[in-house]
Amino acid sequence: VAAAFTHRAMSSLYGPHPTSATPVFASVLPCGQHCLETTRNHLWLFAGGEDGLIRRFHFYKSLNAAVDAKAASSMEGHVPHASPVSSWNTCAVETKQDGKGRRRAAVMSMAVHSEGMWALSGNLYGDVHLWTVRVSEGNCHHVFARHKEPIVSVRVLARETSYLSASFDGAIVLGDLHTADCETLVPGMNLADDKALRNRLTSMEVCPSSNGSLFSTTSTSGVCTLWDLRVKATSVLASLADSSDNPSWMLCSGWSHSGDKLFCGRRDGRITEWDMRSRSFSRQLAPGWTGPITALCVLPNHIACAAEEKHLAVFDQRDDWNTRATPTMLAAQPGHIGYIHASPDGRFLTTSSGLRTWTTGHANNSVVAYDLTQLLQLPPHPTVLVE
Image 1 (cartoon, rainbow, N blue to C red):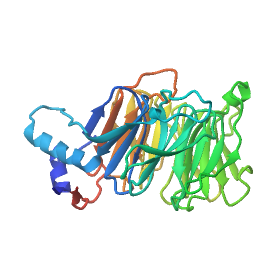
Image 2: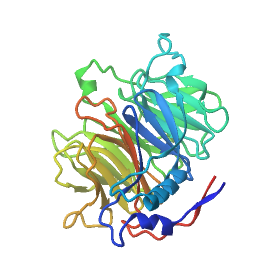
Image 3: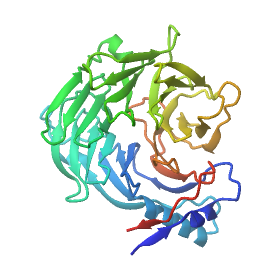
Image 4: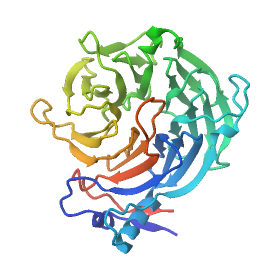
């Protein structure tokens, strides 16, 4: 049965001039959720958990339920539950890395085929699994065991026939999804070495306008490194760093949709912007928060970021950050937000709360979705038909 989700219906959740975004649906789960991904049409939402489960939610049915619940409930502040579809246990597959068999392994990162045909997941022990989703959901077709440390990021490249994975020790691997061949582009470091600990990889993102050839990594050394798959991979294309002798850790990053800017969130609460044309520092935003920027996501004209256990906020990229950098506060959400995912048009924002191997703080084990249509004064979105 098809159901229509419309802007008109959704607007009933808010007042005429909202100053913050109310969650439209949420799911509180038994453990921390470390990563989020969606299909290209945003129909399916996937969450990877500390317990090794990948959970799938129906995004638009969840929004429809939010509208219905708002109409039926008089409870102020009531947030409807997300609509779960299925889940599968990634720990049910024997690892090929050390022969120890089935172990509980947190899902640290994910990538999903644009139409939801398959998914990749990277776990705590450095394995990358290839799963089918739409047919024989949860069936593991291959385990790529080329890493020795937790997988920071898995990203599918433009033609969806290959992927990049990066782990805490700095190793970067290029994998072929047709042949299962892998190439180690950058070897990992020994994390028992103090120098390696100071250079632990924290994020990897692929430039959206480069057909997957240009990507970036950030680390606890405070340096953002640019790589180009068209040249020798072990040769650094550029290193972006502060002039400070002791730069603050870079914990997360995101490319602008045009690919001409790169934003990095730091441990000291700053967001730095880099110009990719000149490969140089452009400006920085210092919101005045004391906690680190734990997650960051770039929207078409805005930046969404989370400060450790305090705030979830949106900043306008078009503002002059030197004179005006007033955030639009989405929520004072308790708990460590480890991941933020946005729809391509920036209309929907989803967060997950999980520590992602951090040793301090706490997670509230939630997945929360926001509709930013009215808050950011976006044009009404068309009717969405839900299967």
